[in-house]
Length: 200
Image (cartoon, helix red, strand yellow):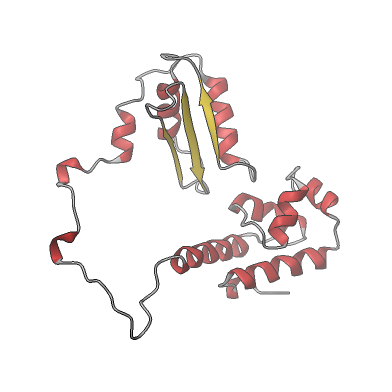
């Protein structure tokens, strides 16, 4: 069995998950049941390397495959994800190629007074008291904490229905350590829809 502490690349990650799955000897149907109903297709895509799972899904999968200590696997997932981001950065120009070099003043930096702090900005949108919206807040919390599925959703309502107040209140309330950022956006194109998304 692969040591999750040694996993660094996407190929090593996929190979390790396949090893866990084969060692467990489970069908995707049984695995789905043991993972609390995570879709079989989600698990299959994860095992075959066609998708990259959320941390919560990794915990469920590793436990279902018989491992009691899930944290090394979650840590491995984070390393691989960080490597994917670093690997997607532009590479150095090949030897012998010509590069256009920017001057010192080519980067536009806003004045410090124009840089907005996200939490401060959102707190200006949140009401002092939000009444009778507990069910909607619970639905949003469930969306952000579920182990698989879409990573964004739309919240629809008529003008002045309180979409922004609801989502601002929700974004400012901490969820768990596994959800690192929850945000929302709205715009003039679709005034009756707000998009909400989370990053695990």
